[in-house]
Each structure stands twice: as structure tokens, then as C-alpha cells.
Image (cartoon, rainbow, N blue to C red; front, side):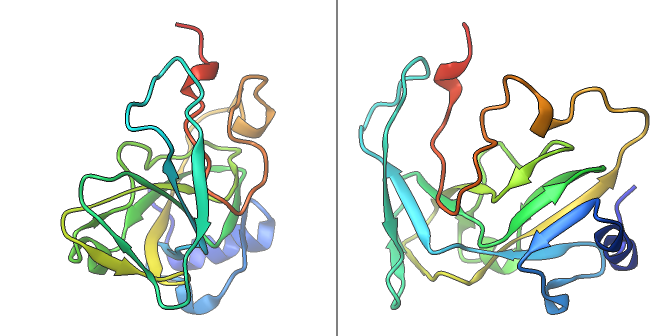
Length: 178
């Protein structure tokens, strides 16, 4: 079951959903709009290796925007910090963003109960498009969880994305054993 706008507000009041900054204008019928933060990043190497740390170069989006190019992976970040303590959050692109040919995540649209951070976006585009810090970029949808939770993300020993940040975070796949 997806939370309605009224239920999202109830959960915010209870402290099970935290969104900073929060603005009531960003609340949809059953979602909350998030915005592109002021930082983007690109990997420094052309070939990425899943077993190695792949460093990124982080840069600030200029006031007059930044043009994204096809065939390039950009890591972005939401302006909003979230804490989700009792629901499963899903991040989806806004339809207006999709109609500009912007995909905001390659595979990682679902968050975990206990996720406490900004959201790193895996951005790709089908055409050149100029983006701006603060523009609406996606929407968070919250699903109810059935049953007891044993492993909250923010309490897991092997959770890789728990350091609070306002910048995009590169893949930590290399920390897995395979």
C-alpha cells in the first residue's frame, strides 16, 4: 500500500519519515517531490571495475546550469536529506524530467527501511539537456511494510551508504566480497 499525502504528513509528525528541508508545496497526492542538489559527479576513468574503487570528480552546478551529454553517466544528489524509519521508499523520476530525456536512476530506485541520507542519482540522458541545481528531479513514494524488520539499513554492519553527505557518492561495489 502506498501512503497518501495525509498519511505522509502523519508519519512526518510521528518522526518515522524525516525530510529536510520540508516544504508542503512539494507534497503530491501520494508522493513527495525532491530536487537536484548543487553537486554532480563523473567517474574519472572510462572503464569502471566492479572490484576496485572507482574515483569520481565532484563539481558544482553553475548558476546558469550544466549541460548533460548522452553516453555519459552522471552522479547527482537530492537537495533533500531523508530518514525513512518504518516504510520502503521508492524514488522515481518526475514525468516532466522524463519528457526531457533524463533518467535519474539506472537500477536503484528502491531504498531500505532505515535509510538516512540524501539520494545519489544515476543520471543519464538521451539528448543534451541543461539542468539546474534546485530543479524538481524526482518523487519519493512510501510503501507500507508488513511484518517485523530485523535489519534496518542504518544499523547494518555492512551498510555502505550511511555517511551523511550533500554530494553524490560513487559505487561501493568493491566493498563486497565476490
